Amino acid sequence: MENKGYTLVPHEKPFRYQEGELTVTRGSAWSGPGCHIGCGVLLYTDKNGKLVKVEGDPENPYSNGRLCVRCLGVPEVTNHKDRLMYPMKRDPKDRGKNKWERITWDEAYDLIEEKFNKIKAEHGAETVLFAQGTGRDIAAYITRLAWSFGSPNYTIFLSGGACYLPRVAGFIATTGAFWVADCSQQFADRYDNPEYKVPETMFIWGNYPLTSNSDGFYGHWVIDLMKRGMKIVMIDPKVTWLSARAVEHLRVRPGTDAALALGMLNVIINEELYDKEFVEKWTYGFEELKERVQEYPVDKVAEITWVPAEKIRNAARILANSKPATMQWGVAVDMTKEALPAGQAIAALFQITGNVDVPGGIIAPPEILNYAGGWGRELISEEQKAKRIGLDKYALLHYGFQAAHPDTLVETLITEKPYKMYGAWIQTSNALACMGADPKLLYRGLMGLEFIVCVDIFMTPTIMAVADVVLPAATFPERDGIRVGDGCQRGEVINKVTQIGECKSDMQINLELGKRFNPEAWPWDNVQDMYSHMLRQTGMTFNELQEKAPLYLPFSYRRYEKGMFREDGEPGFNTATGKIELYSTFYEMAGLDPLPYFEEPSPGPGATPELLEEYPLVLTTGARIWSM
Image (cartoon, rainbow, N blue to C red):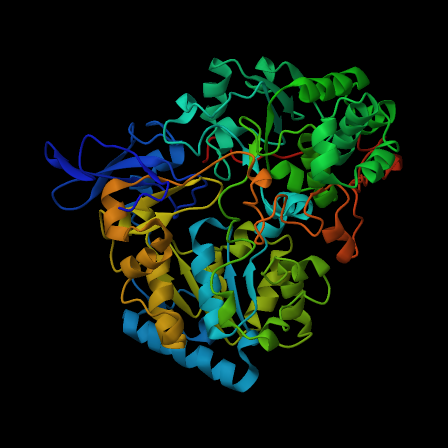
């Protein structure tokens, strides 16, 4: 392979070998079932090709042989008796009834092609909705399917808009990129890399990484770094194992994260603890931010957040004096009334202290996730793009985010405005059971559609309630694949080791159906060729990488000084001003407040104090424990 700065991890054994009577295949975890990280795995199959065991790959630097319980349970999921095994259809009048008829894949594809093309011809491609659940690996392929069909109405159905995207937006609005904690995950030699520096302090904000392992962040990296001397500051209402070991624990009132961040900014700015040289040279709008944080003196913030003032001051000083400091944050930041300004304010803490793009600070992955951009946007006309649902209502959709607005889509299903929807492709989403705040309303909207296709691993309530055709999807041990994104800074391979029924991977399904919709947009003969196309910049084919993965991408620090963030090659950041925009011109163009602010969650002690006597407790609910 031509040396392009990529690093391959050496392995003692080939990617597939025998261990007694079992065949062992090296690879990576991914979806389905849902996976946030892509840990290195060893998949054990018996002589009949049945998956019997999954273990961590000790040669994979990303996870070092460790796995979460979800991966350990993959054999049970893959071999479960209730898996969907083959395509099925039923008459639309029998929705909600167990009157499924088994059909072949060709029959299913013929029916889908006929129905969707009929809708397209009679009503327009925009009247077919393409919906996925939370992101993971399907995002690139479903966007290409939607756009090659001609529909602008791809969406992360009722999930991503309230999970992760607000944090993504907060960083994109100020820097033009997304940023993650630097735990050396971008280096094949990890903590021993000579360029890497262990953070002095990690701020863990609205996240419990040991159990969640969310969005490209493996929770035990925190433990690895603590063993190397890193301190932690926890921002979490709960007392946890990590908070008990933190140098400071801020038990913030749920929904007041923006106020807490603004109070900490008040301390850092007024005590002149920020990085003056970095702020002067690389940021825009510092004076405006300085003026805004005067509205949030620490004593006032203490009253709002229920965090003692001295703890707020101490945490701010710890952050400012830690060289470097890093951050891991979670969905708790997103699921508030003020998610965008909260993300913006928290990001500013690390921006004005000069912890951006430095060893042990926060770093930008090599590319932004497919949540924002997708794959194949050039396939859809400008005329069709303008028909995207929510575009007239939410200005941010004009600036980088390509999905239709999910809540507005539900409204459209009911009101038929700005136009009536007729069809839906629902893939990796159990929207009725998992994501809709008003499932009865969503059910009513979906039942008004003429034709609905669902793709999933199991028969879900959504499929049983509304689908006309169901296609059986593969779990990751049943498919070949590649794994990039989520800030992983590496390329991993998913290797097929078993086959359940007639299941196909989401990628194979989308490729085969896409070739029917628009063959020029899907020129590949098989998924392996498609993956090789996606890997072309590495100089490796899928089959070559299959034997050698993981592949670590080239990485360097302080890329903003080298013109590596901007298309014009000039130093700076990918923003209108070329700087980190503490005052966001991005938000200003969208008609939003360009500076971070706090708004009381309602109902709540601040917004509705008259309810406190009768309802003195504030409820906050966390995710499932040890589920990922």
